[in-house]
Image (cartoon, rainbow, N blue to C red; front, side):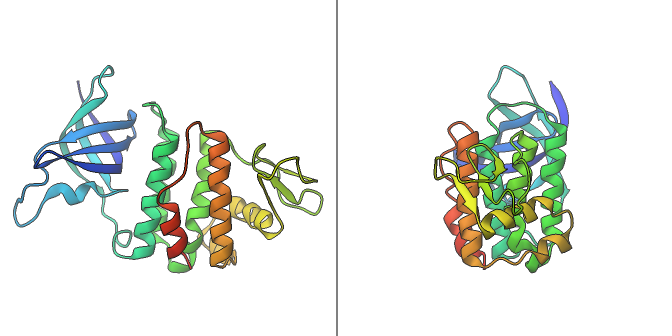
Length: 244
């Protein structure tokens, strides 16, 4: 059947001489794979393959059958044209990280309009963010996505609960009997990042390169403890090198 849906490109790989196989997070069907024929051929001085970069937001008309794993796109156009996401190294690296994180978490093709709205709005906010905000954006998105996926960190950092137990996903008074923890300023910064609601809130959280590196590694561990077969993020080392 033919349906109209909005979608976000997670990943695209070459298929044959002129086509792509694209993994997308769609508003109507959740995560889906599509074969897009002929987009790598030149047309009017360029190719349409550029519309399938990671994080591209498209309005599409698709052929969909529930029993199939690979579908086709009948029509597509830009759903939103970024101003800055593809223009700079930092934001471009950020969206590659965000899309890989989504791919590792979205296992089943289930519709979740609230999650889709969160992801799309996060991309639009990143596009509009200044450099001071963008540096902390990956951390904030990672924590917020976990909450949307059902494993929100419980509690807050305080003098009474200074240890973040990543295995249990909760702030605690004492060190647990394992090493999957964040403490000190890493635990405090995580609490601040979870509470951030505005661009100004994110910009106000002061983190240097080493703190961001440690937090991203800790959050990767957190996801690996809560998402089956999560593994490691290939984009993480690049992101850690880029963020200042």
